[in-house]
Length: 283
Ligand code: AMP
Figure 1: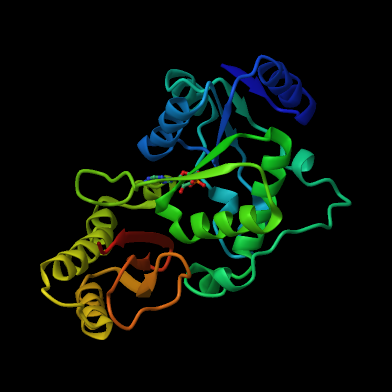
Figure 2: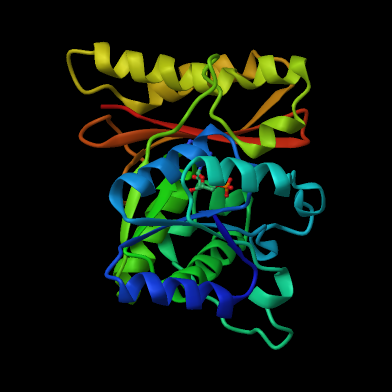
């Protein structure tokens, strides 16, 4: 695996592949790799001749009181895991390379970023779309693979790609979970064993909601499902709910009845310190 830390060295490798007619998949990440990240890399291998993973903890997607300074990292472990998973090039730039001092351009998707995590994390999605647009311009991949773990992010990126005519196909990958159902996340390392047990209430509630929808003979009303979900989560110690809602998968607008492609979306805080998100299709 080649490790490139400058845009020039990354581009010179990629140019050789392109000249040889090889297709390129990109997996953007912030590192501290777990099976969720590795599944995206394997998907890239399936789809393309070459896989590039980017490893960049993007400061502009963190709010002032968020965990940028303590975001987990394991550079050597990440290099080893990416290499073993078949990544051909790891692009790992320093912050001042991605954001020069004079940087003043941003990319913003407007409506889709207003609700859900956009409400709790102002500026987050603008940071995401700006860095992903830069990565698309640097790498110019044929495919880019994103996890459904960050489902709102996936929908926002699809919108950006359509609106700005990026010549890249966006592939969503289902959430990879721990045995107990918790969605894998680099941030799970912050959880104590007790907090970890409590955190599982989010995925359990997703499953309860999904089971109720799949078992129902008719379209269910969302309000009954949401009050059941909120009761379950409020009964769990250490946890406070940021949001739990059911939305249309494409528009991300709240549904009144569960009909068509709807998805449960949720975010909770464990002991206020740790913010976790999850979602599940209800079809
Ligand atoms: P991150 O490093 O957390 O920014 O994540 C990088 C990519 O991996 C994003 O597209 C995430 O949605 C995806 N990802 C993170 N965790 C999971 C998971 N448990 N299952 C599937 N994809 C994931």
